Length: 164
Image 1 (cartoon, rainbow, N blue to C red):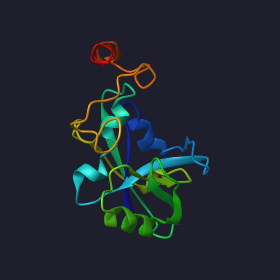
Image 2 (image 1 turned 90 degrees about the vertical axis):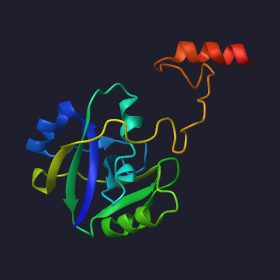
Image 3 (image 1 turned 180 degrees about the horizontal axis):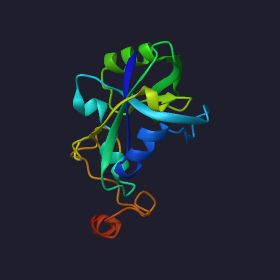
């Protein structure tokens, strides 16, 4: 059984514990999916999406650990690339064997039942990357297109306009 983690807002934890994880609409051709990452020995890689998810305004994120059968069909790949159809066990091997697994995701094309949920845990709220994998130490683009609707965008655009 493959152990995966789904990150969600703390306010959804009770509902997920009672009813499971619902599929979300995706831009991926798979349609409605559950987003997850394999639980690996590397805590950072397993929870890498946390800070990016917090950018949408969620205050506290929790990790929902669940198990699915090894032969469950899933899609795996980097978020900006095409995803590969494979089984859950092979998806774990792909993510674990990647040179840089930052930005990878596993898409499960079905809901997760309450009986498949292993645990709901609090996680370190400062784990992960923002904007894109490997962005740490690089200044974000300050143009008005890239910063529309973002927190702190006015100050960032002012510095960007002053430097150009």
